[in-house]
Amino acid sequence: MSRFVNIIIGCSSMIGVSMIKKIDQRNTIFTSRKKLSTIKKGTWIKQDLNKKINSKIPKKVKKIFFLSSPYYMNRNLFKKNSFKVEVQWIKKVIQNISCEKFIYISSSSVYEKNHVIGIYKKKCENIIKNSKIKYIQIWRPFNLVGYKSGLSDHFHNLLIKFFYIKRKKKHIFRGRRMDKKGYSSVEKFVSFVFFNSKLNKSFTYNYRNKNLIYVGDIVKIFQAIAKKKIKIEFSYNFKNTKKKLSRYKNKAPLAKNIFSHESSKNILKNYYNKVFNRNAKLLQHL
Image 1 (cartoon, rainbow, N blue to C red):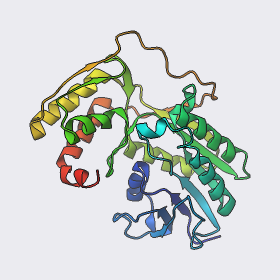
Image 2: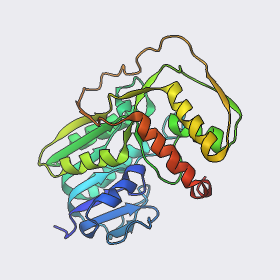
Image 3: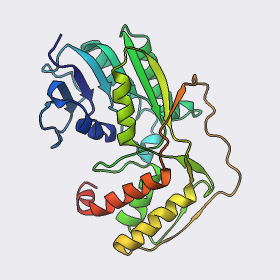
Image 4: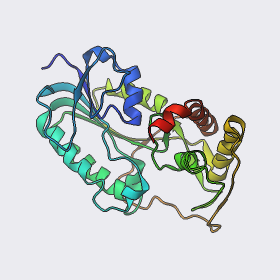
């Protein structure tokens, strides 16, 4: 076996950025298309999963952390095959790198009926489960928040894009102001992933937060911080007033819940403050 214990596939992702700070870099290989400056002691190998597996990557390691996934952007959600590529990435990694333990970051979207991401995430889960890997650990996180350059199109980031980057003065959101979401910090999630990755067991876990926050209150949090930090003011409303039906209608097997027990409100406050404090860096990457 290689002297390397871990390989992180997709270290430039939001979760990967947090992992770099926590993992023992000396026995870890980090792969991505671009090297991050926070990789100080680890071995970085350039890898574009749309191409062949880099010959420098060992054929055998103990653990694979698979974090790569097409970026969550609204334009990709309307393209049928945008997320299909992840299925091919998973197959390629399993065929070229053997391991004792495979840690895969799936998504809560597997529970949503006909959700394009959930469809392919579930296919990826099944490919891994049908492999000969000894231990398979699958995580389905709900609403993770963490800082990295570049912004996804999750709701909490749309506020930044609409009112900070585009400087819109008003906007009408889809959905309802009384919809609820539970947010978790990516840092705490990564700690759970690492702790469990030391256990010789297979599982599928949901990672979520029962401390919910109204969507309308998320906008208010952002609005108050934006007004204080950069003197931005805007108006907003929500398009729908009818009671929301449950989004989770898919028949994907339910998994055990792991709860973060964090304050969704504080997570979002800290995130928005960090974004505004690093505005020059943020704007540079958008």
